[in-house]
Amino acid sequence: DMRGTGGVAAALIAMAGRNGDGGRTEERQPRDRPPAARRIDSELLPIAVHGSDDVSEGRLRAALRALEHAVLVLEREGWALPVPDGGRGETSGFDLYLSPTDALAEGAPEGDVPWSFLDSNIGFGVVDPDVDRLGACVAQAYGEPLALSLDPAEASGWRKALGVYLARRVTGEFGCGDAVDRQQAEPYRSWIPTVERPGERAPLDGGGGALLFALLSERHDGGTGRFIRDLWDLVRQRTWEQETLGLRASPDLWEGIDTVLEASGSKLDPYMDELAVARFSLGDSARERHAGYAALHDLNTPVPLTFETDLAALPHHTGASPVLDVYGSAYAMVDVRGAPSDSRLRIWLRGEYGVEWQLSASRLDAEGRERGRLSAPPRVGDRRAYLPIELDEDTAQVLVTVTNLGHRLPDADDP
Image (tube, rainbow, N blue to C red):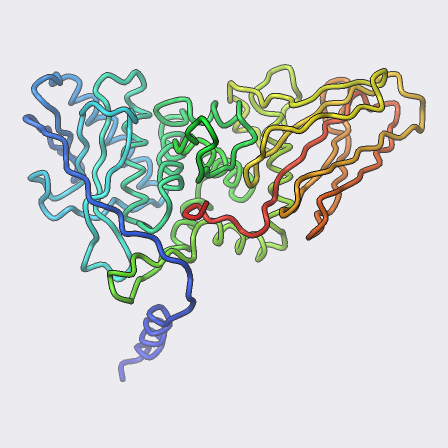
């Protein structure tokens, strides 16, 4: 027995052991690669950019430079290259295609990796050749296949979120489109939408998840991105049963976030309330910025108020807010300037049955700075909440935030 091999063997057995009976998800269906008549290979890295005759050589070379930059930046931050594709595309490394796509930038699966101990998938990237922000689009199209190689069982919303988030890491821009701005403008949506609303299609463009990743990173690693990288490593798994059952989908990223927060002495539900309040202060130069998330102060879209009222209109009964998805939020602002000293603002919440509700209120001064916050503890089976807010001379407004906590930990594969 060579010294130390016993511990290695025990670790391998533990990794292969049946540690849980988590859910399943369908294996990712392979996509055909776009037609391409031209290719430029990198002299620095195992990557290549492909395009049709309609794509100029200058555009191909610009995309290759952007891809090289993205790979080098992310490799420096500890992200591994996507798994080799075994000669598909007539190259052995990662392939990016400049080809028309409605998504502007995306990653596509091409099949599992049979020699990998942990579940993994081969993928390639596609970028529309006419995009304006080529660097951000290329980084996003590289990040999505990277997610496939790490954990193909994660829902497409998470995969797209990683692409949009990594584009931010590489270029400073949240991906190819306006996904994060749309998430800010529609705070009633979940961070990772899974369902369609009547008359509209939920934007599975990764904006909510990318913003969530950025907020988590600011809180846990000071914005270096290390926490997000380690989180994806944490939730990797091996599907050991018959292939016909699909991929093992547990632990997933929601379970990983929940576990890490609990290990750090926190809980997911109150943290969702913190993020709901924090995002309200981002994206509007007229509002005081949240000091804990300074790196996100360049967002351009403010979170809208659902209701506004003031002392003269009290008592005020609102109508129903927009339907809130799990971890979606609604906001109300009460102007209390001129309130008598030592007075109290009382707030009641009545929500639908079957889910838990988080109600919080933040006292803001005349410059919009948060002077204090009070939250009502969510209670199982009780759709009501109440908060009494003691007002002082420094309080000009009270921001009321309501968040739907659902009835269990969400699963991006399960509506």
